[in-house]
Length: 224
Image (tube, rainbow, N blue to C red; front, side, top):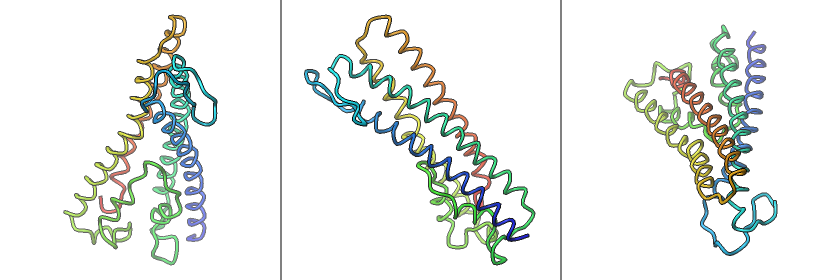
């Protein structure tokens, strides 16, 4: 039974890691474009676009960057939503496991799952877990003092809040900063506004989903 449980945990960790990799790549592409869009540039010179997409004249730069950001935000939002869905499903499966340990009679299923997962761009839970000391594992949560559990929980929430600023807020700010600088006729301005509203709604949606997931997970972290 222990071997079967270990195999299930490995499969769950692999599935969650695959989704995390997709979300990581999507966010990295998004943040590169957001940074390029935010950098000051000369108004009289042609500007190179990221990813080797060529150069554009100054009047079209912000329109092109805005379009790229809108598309990348929606793609990232979809990837992150799938990552959260995979994590929730994995947590549900881990909760359903009846055994307390899956390897060597001492490693808890959740500890094995955390160990096998690939890191994500905004995954900060290991820092909060490490703050609880060397014995901060699921099989030894009772050995963690109450004050350290409380400090670790608030540390986790603080780290998540800081990550949200870069993970969600910065791309959104870059999107609307580009929109404010667009010089285009009305027939291009209105579709751009619609695209911006749709992509912003997607970004806000996954932020709310991520916030709710963090509130759930902070109760699961060892010793919380």
